[in-house]
Amino acid sequence: MTSSSRRFHYAWIILIIGTLVVLGSLGLARFGYTLLLPDMQKALGMNNTQAGVLATANLIGYLALSVIGGALASRYGPRVVITAGLALAGVGMLLTGLASVIILAVIWRAVTGIGSGASNVPVMGLLPAWFAARRRGLAAGIAVSGSSVALILIGPSVPRILSNYGENGWRICWFIFGGATLLIAIIGFIILRNRPAEKGLKPLGADSEAPASGSRSEGLKWGLVYRSASVWHLGLVYIAFGFSYIIYMTFFSKRLIAEGGYTQEAAGTLFMTMGWFSLLCGLIWGTVSDVIGRKRALIIVYLIHTVAFSMFALWPAPPGFTVSAILFGLSAWSIPAIMAAACGDVLGARLAPAALGFITLFFGVGQALGPLVAGAMADAFNSLAPAFLLAGGVALLGAIGSSLLRPAKIIE
Image 1 (cartoon, helix red, strand yellow):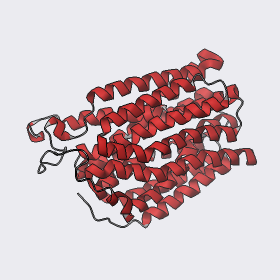
Image 2 (tube, rainbow, N blue to C red):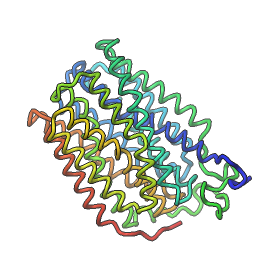
Image 3 (tube, rainbow, N blue to C red):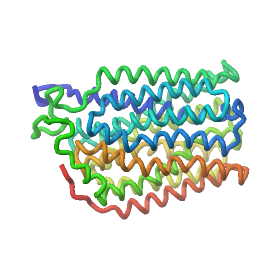
Image 4 (spheres, one colour):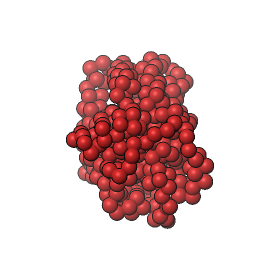
């Protein structure tokens, strides 16, 4: 039975599960650290540099699996890779909650990052197989909203848990995050499918295409990924997002509480507000990129980030913090959505996971360096403001790099 004879395409089920995977692998596994950072610093005796090291360990783990995860998904199918990675991330979060010294926290955050990289990259790369080119931006935009849902959920709940459980509150939060992620992994293993052909379908929106067939590895031209100048350029532009946004997200709550006079509850409320504003950002900007092109959309989003990050440094008052959070929320996860769609545009559905994994290597390098540099700057200047200014400057470089992108020959 083809997609034309069904009113509800299974691609939407894939997209729902994909959004949940993003919620667990990024929303909980990575961004949960933002609100837990002040309490973890107290409990483990960390300064800002050490807090940056802890975040960097997570991101190095993510980096280590980003390329491998995408390539494995292209060859062996995303379903097993995604669910195994998500399960590992869940276990890593559970063990983070048990850490009694910094070194153990570093190890388990790295394990969590490995699981995140093995699940998030392949799930974003899975979408081009289920959605035709004209709907890839839309699909990727919806999927990245999983991070927004996580912000909305943990913004009000984490401060409440921290208040109720005192010095053990941050551990309880990690246990909850880990358990929820393991549950998503089980659901994903049951429901996810690698290709529309497994359901006798065409990709959604590809009415003229026949269902894909053949073995997973048949006909894959791996060299196209690593020889493509367009893919390399996308990767270099992606560095700017990884470096800049992770500084903002890692030290968001710390800046508000330590330097902005916010309570934990007030910081959580603003975190939730940012989540609400970011809920549709991937959908909006993914769709915009379908219409105006990936290049123009990237330029606009990077400029918005430049203003948001700089404002967080230069206007240290509730109005400034709020406007900054809203601006970032309106564009937060749009760049990964656009990049995922762009990989499908350039290399086609089969190689999209490998291409996304390859450019995520660049993104991951930026991510790994961001918290480490920002934490060291915060200790050196006794303020987080210079770190946020640096984030704004790097985002501006991202806009400049995006303006130099050229149309690529589509291989599909």
